[in-house]
Length: 349
Ligand code: GH3
Ligand code: MG
Ligand code: MG
Image 1 (cartoon, rainbow, N blue to C red):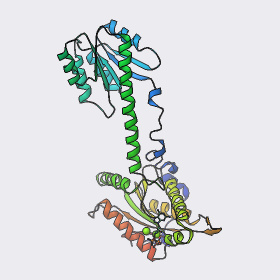
Image 2: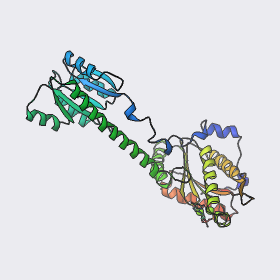
Image 3: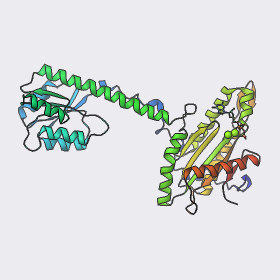
Image 4: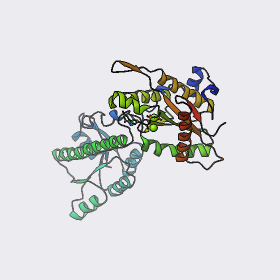
């Protein structure tokens, strides 16, 4: 086990270098819960509409009907032209003719449904075919609505309006789902990733480390004598300390690493592409920053420290993420036994 006395202390500049630039950014992009679902209201944005028709007259008529700020119209002269445009970007709404020389509207519908990404494409068939059986065939191929030529401009506008409503509902649902996914992976008190998030993320990073041979470290950090802080100053005081410790972790970890709160006053940090010296430098920095915090509760100034245990992935041993957390945890308990407010590395003399 390394002791604090044996920890080399490179200059702060070294840490910045190892940390790849701006450490403050860690997690702000991946886990910014508050931003999800707050994008510009999709009903205010111009709706992108792809119009596929081999008739120049009908392309013009549809474009004229949907002219205005609400719609951004892109014209395709054939089914394959439409397919090419769809491969480049997502169109939430497609209006397609049935009969086209190279690829007909039915095939285009089927193609869109087969290749549909997460976001929905609302399809309106606009065609000279009027038979009921054709209508059924169009809907079965994936069209959402059907309008016959010659069309009434008011009706086309109304039906496109229906499509717009469905698309907006779909977008709201997607944004709420994203928010729920983020919430499920976020610790509500500190805003850090939670246990589930790190347990999903870390094994993937570990397989990368196994494949490409880069260093992979797991750190367990635990606040010292935290129960007595809670017992003496109350739960709110304890929560404020947990939040501050989380801020220190967030400010010092690189965006490519992950700091998570895995339970009560226990945190896990996963670091990659970092040497043993780099890990020790970072942990010593975290330890010192926490130690130098002054918390005021009931007009009393208190100091709370943390103990750290680290374990490095080794190809020689049959290790997975859970075992590495266990090894880091044991090292952390060794730090506790040796007086707390210190760092221990697993398996090194
Ligand atoms: P040690 O130095 O050995 O780690 O001692 P400790 O007192 O920190 O450890 P112990 O496991 O005995 O107590 C952990 C305490 O953490 C218990 C509880 O009061 C506190 N705690 C756990 N979760 C929360 C939380 O979400 N908020 C607050 N305020 N306190 C919490
Ligand atoms: Mg503790
Ligand atoms: Mg604990």
